[in-house]
Structures are given as C-alpha cells and as structure tokens.
Image (cartoon, rainbow, N blue to C red):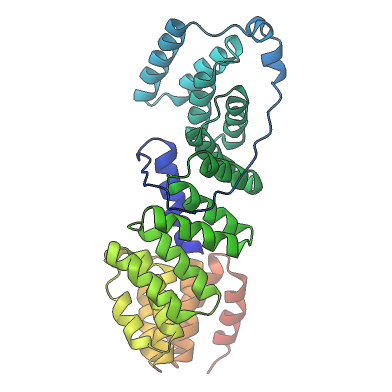
Length: 347
C-alpha cells in the first residue's frame, strides 16, 4: 500500500493547489454512488462577535476582489504568511463569504497548518454552496491533518455530488484502504477505472491489494495495465517485481528492477526487493555486494547499513560486515548493536 499511497499523496497535493485540472468522464450506467455526510460547522467565537456575522450581510464583491488581488500579490512573492493574515482579517469582517473561507483554507494548507485549514473548509461547506470540488479539497486537507474518518466522509460526499469525476472514487479508495475497508476500496477503484481507464494508479492500487490478498497472478495482470500506461514508473516496476518474486520468478523480478532509474537503485525498498530476488537465486555474495553499494550511496541510512552488514556476514565476509554494523549502530539502530558485538567476537 505504501508505494501507491505515496503516489496518491503527491497527486492529491497537486490537485489541491490547483496544479492539476479535474478530469471527468461520463458516468457508467448503473454505477453506485457512495453517500457521505458533512455536518454543519458551528461558527468560531471570533466570527460570532463580528458585526457582519450578526447581520449576515454579504461581502462587497469589489472589496473581496481587492483582498484577493492583495493575496495574489503576496503569494506571487512567496509571502504566504502575509496572505494568511490578510485573509484571516477578511473572514472576520465577512465571515459568511465562502470564497474567502476557501482561499484562507488553501493558504493555511500551503503553510502546513492542516487542522486550521480543514476547519475553514468545514465552515465554507456550512456556508454553502456545497460543491464536489470543495468537499474534495476538504478531504485532502483532513487526510493531511490525520483526520482519516473525516477525509473518508468528504471524499464520499464529493463523489456523491459529482459522479463523473474519476479522481473522487480513486482518492476515496486510498482512505478506505487505510481504514481496512478493502472490499469498499476495490469497488471504488473499479468505478474509477470505468470512469477513466487510462489512470495507471487505479490498476497499481488493485495490484497492491491483490498482493496483500496473496493473489500474485491477479496482481501481475493489474500491474501490467499500469505499466502499459506508464512504462517509466519506478513504483510500478517495484510492484511487478514483488508479484514476480511471489510467483517464483526472481530472475524476471531482477530484470524488471534493473530498469529502475539510477538514483533509485540505492533506495532501500528497491535494494530489499533485489536482495529478496538474489537470495531466492542463491546469489548471496551478489546480494551482499549490492547492499554494500546501496549503503555506500546512502551513508545516512542506518537500515541499509544494517542490511549490508547482515548480508556480508551471510556471505562470510565478516571483516567488511563490521564497519557497516558499526555505522548502523552509530546512526542509532539498536538491532545493529547486537550484530556489531557478535561480529567483533568472530574469529
């Protein structure tokens, strides 16, 4: 789940900050629509104290336009905190203006104040109108704030409000997986795939679920679809390699991993997959050399250093194993300390 979740997190951030345009496709006949509710938020104390809040008077569009122009200028200069302060003042004066609330929520998200951002989204939704896009953004922010259940509700609401957008069931599926709702996640992914079949993340997610269910052959079929759509993805290569190892094809897994981009060859996850394949082939010395090279490329990675020490010991090269065990120990890995002591006592 980790690989696809990371890809989804990046995609969600891009969509949240408006770097991706929502893509829509016709809703397939008979597709189900999950329903998610969003309770109305109570106004904050500062909002209730505002004269505008008491009167419910709408903001003057010209004033709002001037505020937004000032915020745009701040943000273009990278002064997100000034933008936040300006918007915070604006929503106190015009607490029932939804666009100002939404803009404040986005700025808060940009300065990593995720819980506050989500609170502003809740208030914006309570003000109305309730749109799929705002629910989607609220779901992304709730997830960033660690409010997983609330994220689920927002994404489900977004899907219910716009059943044609393939992103909504795709993101909903990742939260359902987090919550252990695997069958629901598979249904959401199937729906997303019907809406937009050329999305590799859908098929990669289904492949990961299949691997979790020990259905390696099914996983390979799904990941083949993902790789056909995005053949250069290192993440999809790793999922395919896992499936191939499960199917008892370590040589094919190694060939797949050889195509991983050079900077990622020393990535711990890639190295461990290659180590698994080499171990299955009985190539212990090759695995030890591979881990040593990966650990040298990432000298601050304690776990890679421990892996190198472990495999070098397994290959019978205690003299080379000891420095890696020592490095891992110095980097704070407690398991490495036991290995270091054992290696020191070896003849």
